[in-house]
Amino acid sequence: MKSMSKIVAILMVPLVLLGCKKEEPIVITSTDYQNAVDKVTEIMVHDIFSPPVASRIYAYPNIAAYEIIAQNNPSYQSLAGQIKHLSPIPTTDNKNVNYPLAALIAHMDVSKTVIFSEEMMERYSDSLYNTWKGQNEAVFNASKEYGLQVADHIKSWMDGDNYKQTRTMPKFTIITEEPSRWQPTPPSYMDGIEPHWNKIRPFVLDSASQFKPVPPPAFSLEKESDFYKELEEVYTISEEITKEGEESEGLKIAQFWDCNPYVSVTRGHLMFATKKITPGAHWMGIAEIACKNTESSFEDTVYAYTKTSIALFDGFISCWDEKYRSNLIRPETLINQHIDENWKPILQTPPFPEYSSGHSVVSGASATVLTDIFGDNFKFLDDTELPYGLPVRSFSSFKAAAQEAAISRMYGGIHYRAAVENGINQGVQVGNLVNEKLKMKVE
Image (cartoon, rainbow, N blue to C red):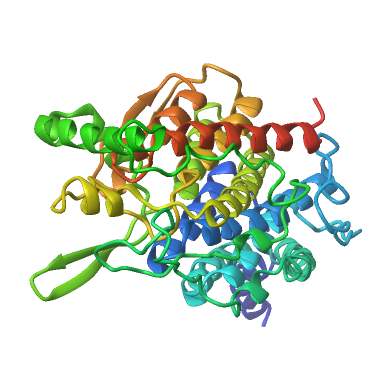
């Protein structure tokens, strides 16, 4: 009987050891956060969101994550009270909460709310949940509970930004009787996108029109007028680039910064779309590159992403306010009517008024914020467009990248010079306001 008892005891040892499995710490890195944002970008490309709406999709999840970091790290200050109508997030005294984990969970949960393909985000988050739960169930459960609590707080605040109301507002009215007014362009002749975006609640702007740019040159088809000279310049540059062919630097720049989420392609009787990232996604990609190059911590990565996404969000509000106020006609329409009826721009003209240039505004805003975070003369290789078949480009600074992004729109044949140059200035003003108004990191 004694020997039988020994055998039973020996057999029980592995079971006891299995039952007492040592739980691992859950380590959340900057790469984990970057991967989550990349997943959101992937889903946005799949779902096809307009550039203004895409900026909203980036901003709120990043703010949710940042607020959790600021809750537990004295190096960061909460945005509550700094941006409009945001109240302090809930607190927790649960010692099992892993704050970076909770921040990432909050980011993914808010992201799921603002995209269409929720199931794609759920599959991604569920796979991570299973891993974390297996590492340390108590920490995972506590962190998830807190992360979702904060996510609900941010979503409640987000619901007051007028986005839902703008979904039911009337379409933009086309005024064909006035030759200076915007008209839909080939090949899809789509309606004007987001004509009511200036009604979205901004984060730091006092109003959508706070940085209203100087007006574009007065519309005129007189050949000596400033406006007509800018129109001719677009046509001349396009013709030169086309003659140079694939080796044209202007062509490479235009294609690199195209960032049109929906390009219509017609072949015979078929029409289909090619999908790309938005200009906001490109700048979020540059923020990721900067974080990787500096080996930024998880907290610093969340901070950089959040500040950049805030600049993008308010930049689009500022730009779209001007677009539908000036309501200026695109070069393609006028060139076809008055210069060359067979001319096509190098890039497909996007479906909204011309002035000011969206790329210019949000590039100026993003570059200004990123320069404040990482410093001037920050050299980097931009590989953001590799997934879309475009090569890496090198930049000496964020500002240099913004200048190239802006001029790319004229090379592409879709903007006049005034929209590019005044758009950059408009964006820089937005970025400066974000830098001055938001006290986020304690140095």
